[in-house]
Length: 174
Ligand code: NI
Image (cartoon, rainbow, N blue to C red; front, side, top):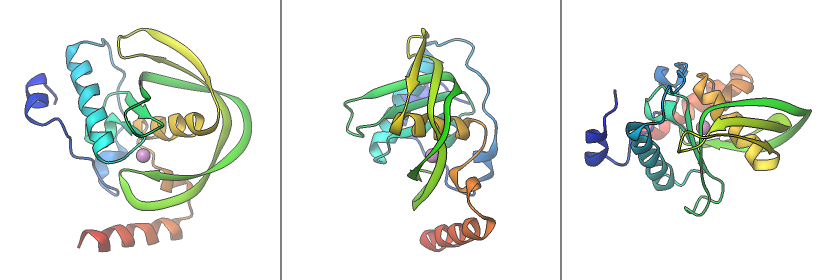
């Protein structure tokens, strides 16, 4: 559940941490970009910047709607909103990038993904747009859309590696 009232009290939201099962839920499309959604987007930006992230999916704050916020500069200078984002692969050549995730703290792993995609989404005003993406934008949008599907970057790793990461996170929390 989410209401504007909660937003006033709690602008910085709690980020779910792997292996929380709620990170595995599939998010539903946003029907209407109304004020509640806009409030949520603002809170997601605050939460992401506070945690020094460059991308955050609503799934990570336990809101199972298809919303992604991003700021590839990480300093508030390049905020981007993607509501109901969809991608199509333009260049299936894989590129690898050292990925991290706010839900999997202190872990980075090299992950391979298609190097060029086209993104279709709604912006923060509910207007649809389309954009071709390469480099970090292509990596980040694929990573965040995975979150909306209940998928995490560790799913691309071997089960042994995943096991090691779970142990490390558990130890860090103790
Ligand atoms: Ni992530």
